[in-house]
Amino acid sequence: MYASHLANLHRQTNIQEPRHLEGSIAKVPVGMMIRQGFQVVRGLHRHGMKWSGLAGRQPINRVPVSQSMGVGVRVLTMSSWPFSSPPRDYSLPNDSWSPEMRNLYDHYNALCEVEEEGQKKRGPWRRLPSYNRTLKYATGGQCLSKVLQAKARLFTRNTEEPGASFEYVVFLNKQEKSCVCIFQAGHLLEGPPGHVHGGAIATIIDSVTGTIATYLAGPVMTANLNINYRSPISLGSVVLVRSALEKTEGRKTLISCQVTSADGARLHTEATGLFVAINVGHLFGT
Ligand SMILES: CCCCCCCC/C=C\CCCCCCCC(=O)SCCNC(=O)CCNC(=O)[C@H](O)C(C)(C)COP(=O)(O)OP(=O)(O)OC[C@H]1O[C@@H](n2cnc3c(N)ncnc32)[C@H](O)[C@@H]1OP(=O)(O)O
Image 1 (cartoon, helix red, strand yellow):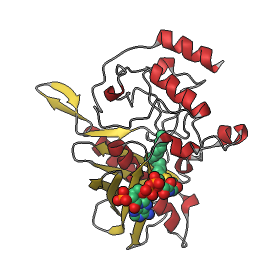
Image 2: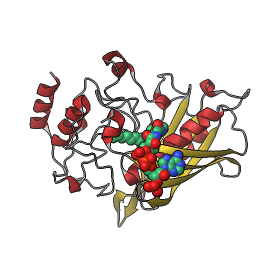
Image 3: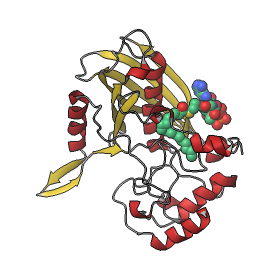
């Protein structure tokens, strides 16, 4: 069923040249023999897609295959997305967003497109889409039962109730090797009364630093997260999580992070994250 769907997909694939993300994105080793995960990864490559662990079912028009793999860079349109329904992009505005969150979103969104000589062009910033699960079969590796695979959801996107937990959007600036996340902490993230749980703060920091590390270095895992909590974050408030590359050294990527109030006046949290590049097989025990 899945194979025939992919074959069908192959015929329908719309080939386009990408305008972004040249060379430096994740390279998934195609030759790796990892059961179901391998089949999906190989199938995706054949169709111009790349498996990204970033944030779920990823329409590949966001993440083209690296040219270094010797495969033509192709882009699959949403109309030929292989799964039953198009995935929900959780990083788009919804009714739970406060006016402050919405304003910040509009601000960074405007920077994604610039006008030059009367023409709209891609700007330095890019909004990253966000989904609630990894690709079918790619979730979690071979140890998971089929039931668990079907139910697995990205930790930060595991509720359908808008505004209840992690409400966030990440904008990436590849030129500056930095990103900013606009984060509104929902009522399910309470730690100290009326304030955000330290683990929830660590989670968003891990996600944001992990995201930029992945975009810069390819598939990585967090090896070390060092966090200093400077001032509490009120539940329901909107904060900025800024992250930038500090240095790379072999397989290691060091990322810094600051969480501030929306106006930047108050420092809430400072952190560094060490990410180590992995082979996809690392997640499958091969
Ligand atoms: C295709 C898949 C794509 C997936 C990518 C997904 C990314 C998604 C990104 C964004 C979306 C948002 C999603 C959230 C993101 C969250 C990410 C997480 O939370 S990951 C879960 C928590 N992390 C773990 O469970 C790791 C467990 N640890 C390990 O698996 C290993 O220890 C690992 C991979 C980190 C390193 O193991 P080794 O065997 O590959 O490498 P060795 O040789 O030990 O280390 C390499 C170098 O790194 C240093 N190193 C390793 N750990 C260190 C540490 N804790 N502190 C300092 N240095 C360390 C070593 O000293 C070595 O340095 P020298 O090359 O000798 O200079």
